[in-house]
Amino acid sequence: MADILIKNITIMETMPPFSVTENADVVITGSVIEKAGKGAGEGITAAKTIDGTGRILIPGNVCAHHHYYSGLSRGMLISAGPQTDFIQVLKEWWWRLDRALDEEAIYYSSLICSMEAIRQGTTGVVDHHASPSFIKGSLSAIARGMEEVGLHGVTCYEVTDRNGGMKEAEEGVEENIRFAEEVDAKASGGNDILVEAMIGGHAPFTLPDEALALMSEAIHRTGRGMHLHVAEDKYDSVWSHHAHGDDIMTRLDRFSLLGENTLLVHGVALSGKEVDLLNERGCFLAHNGRSNMNNHVGYFPYLDRVKKLVIGTDGCGGNMFEELKIAFFKHKDAGGPWWPQDFLEALSRGNSLLESAFRGRYRFGRVEKGYKADLAILDYKAPTPLKMENAAGHFVWGMCSGSVESTIVNGRLVYENRHFTELDEERIFQEARRVAGEVWERADRIKA
Image (tube, rainbow, N blue to C red):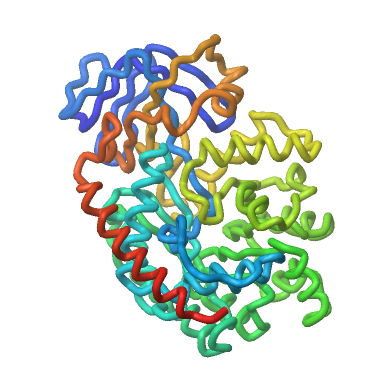
């Protein structure tokens, strides 16, 4: 017997080659898709049957770069000084927030960010964490929230020396290694896991050579990829030239930090030569349109040259429908050549990033046999014909997070008819509000 049978639904593949299949069935057994297509449900009995009539099924979206620690920052009330450049924004806002986080705050950040992602059709999130006052064990708190909600996630600790010098950097590397080994222990014997690890770093301008060497060793030891901000602002590039006499990418490459499982983030101030090196090494690059505009760091002029571009939010929530629309409109405003299908391809490439982070253990991103059953059911009434040739146009111009009716992750129906199936949403958000108030009070006492 199958676990879930979805009947008579329209399947829309969001990863090239795009396709639209009407009146299709999907059979889910365990955590994977057993069969999908016209007639796939004939003769099948299931513990749960969903009538998909008038609905559209897509692979769940992936947020390729998030900061779960920002979950409690929405509307944050603290006294802050001027924020007229990127470094002031970091010092007056984000670096005060992350220093105010404790284990409870991290856990509730993970819960609410995971719940909001799933409500918005996002089934996979790649997180980048910082909590200088609580480093050891912080990634386990993030993972616990993801697992309790039922989200596929990846997390890491952003190594930095910005608060405590090399001692802080060493503790960050140790936490990355500790968590990676924790994941290995969970996965031993072929056990199914929801959350994987990467080796994180903040940004090159807060990472001396000694820290990069430690990160390189951690990558080799754990077999994980690196997750690092690069050239989010020109300050990072100028600092690299001033302090190290090298381009950022050349410096990272010198420490063997660039590879096919490397995730770099932003890249706004990278040169064309550095983009060529990024492509040559096969790195992913996460574009975060909303965050870049909010921080006034400029527009990445080489976006269309990146071969493995993915889409993230940089902490601006987990709504990838919204993120993709804004990224697309900003690109067109900047005179860029890409169209909806190019952006939808970049968004769906987040599934390739997940496959890389999970080290090929699972397949993500298609409604096909053998793929993880990470799916979103949309109540979207197409006002014009929905075809393979215009599917991306419908995604960008019509579909939205409000269309999400139900979400399945790892074969489990975690969100059904716009309600969480097992979580006490009101209690969790009530507790999150209490915890957020305590974090704000601590952050307000911290000097920039």
